[in-house]
Image 1 (tube, rainbow, N blue to C red):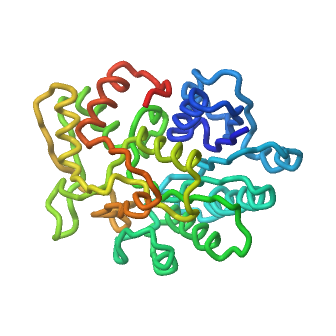
Image 2: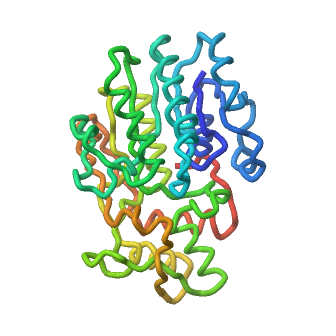
Length: 324
C-alpha cells in the first residue's frame, strides 16, 4: 500500500487521484480530516483507507506491507510565526516517518520547499553541500531546511528517499487555501469580480512593480515527477521541483486575462508589512539534477498551464479527476 500524507490538501489530493488511477497498490490517506472545506478534494477517491494525522504513528506500528510513503502533509502558512507549530507538524512528524521508512526500507518522497533558499544569496542549486548555508526568510522555510539538514546527517536511511523542493505550485484543488492560494487562483477571482487584478508593488529597487520573478510550476508536472521517482527510483537526495524558468507576476496575470478572454487591467498595491521583509523577489529552480536522474518530460509552459487551470477547472469550479 502507498501512504499519502496531506491527502486532503491541494497537492496531496491531486497525487492521490493519479495514484488511484495508475497504481495497483491500495491507498492510505492521512490528514486532519476535521477541515470540512477540504472534503470536496476527496470526493472522487473511493475505496481508500483514511487515517487521522495524529493516529498515524500508532497505526504504523502494526504495518509491514507499506510499499511507499509520499509525505506532502505540512503546515505551509508562510505568515505563521509560531515556531512550535512547525517543530511539531513539519519537523518531528517528518522524522517519525523517516524512521519508519528506514526501519522497513520503504521508499520515502517528502515535500521540502524552495522557501529553504531564502533570498537566494546562495543560488537555487539542490546540491547537498549548500544546505547548511541556506537562510530561509520565515519559520516555515526554517522548518523545511531543518529537516533537510537532519536527513543529510543521518547514518541510516531508506534505500530510496527524495526531498522535493517545491517552487510555486499552482493548479486545481486549492479552493480551500484562502490567502495562501496561488496568484493564479486569486487573479481569476479578482478578474471575475472586478475585471481587474492588483499585484504587490516592488519594494526592491532592482525590480519594477510586477516584475518580481518566480518559478511557477503546474501541479500536473509535480505529479509526473513523483510518478517518475516511484517508478524509476533514481539516486536518493534532495531535488528541485520547478520548471527552471522564472517568470514575472505580470506574465502570469496576463496569462490569466488571456485564458479568461478579458482585457488586461493591472494595478499595484503596497506589499503587506507582515510579509514585506520576508518576500522573495526571485526564484528559479536549477533542474539539472533531476535531468541527470533521467527525467526528460517537457514541463507545461506558464501560458499553457494557466489556460488549462482556468478553463478546465476554475471557470466551472471543477476538482481534479486525475487527468494528466
